Length: 265
Image (tube, rainbow, N blue to C red; front, side, top):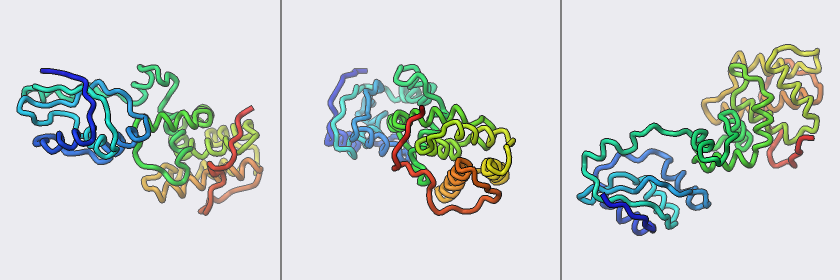
């Protein structure tokens, strides 16, 4: 087997793909995520080679080659030639690493957590969730909303159904708008515990009961939007000390991301 580092142009990627005879089916969205990273300068060095069997058939790397073709960029990658057919038995069979594993092991982001990723993505997306992102794109979102996501994931109590992405995102959005972080923290406390101090904190109890009864994690974009707007509205009522006993549909966001962000004191 021979391995060399090569510059792979879109035309070279196309030629190699045209000689691809026996590879697995393309996975939806994977090449598109890679291409987006390549176009936006987020693609990093990949030590796994584009691999070919002894007869010239492509053994591994079709998603990366499609990404090079779709992005119109040239990428430098290792290329392995001369694999025997039986070598294909061990391609891509190692234990996969999660984004958190890679971020921590590489030192790129040693403080990242699953809750922080969920919070940052929900803060960024708001009522209009974006589809699948690459690891690099997820890290970019975390970096952009790190302080808000950290605050939300630290203060929303880890209670089943009450600490999902919808709640984390709504609290993170509110963090950008609300100057009184102590009161916002109080909302999180009441939401998690179920104990309030009268009508002025009724909004947290109302949305708590709604979530526990119906759930606020949504299986479709329409349900996500509906839940996200309702949680935001409940936070807004709570911050104003207004009574809220019934959760109804809401048309607009209480805390749109485009508003000026306020850092915590």
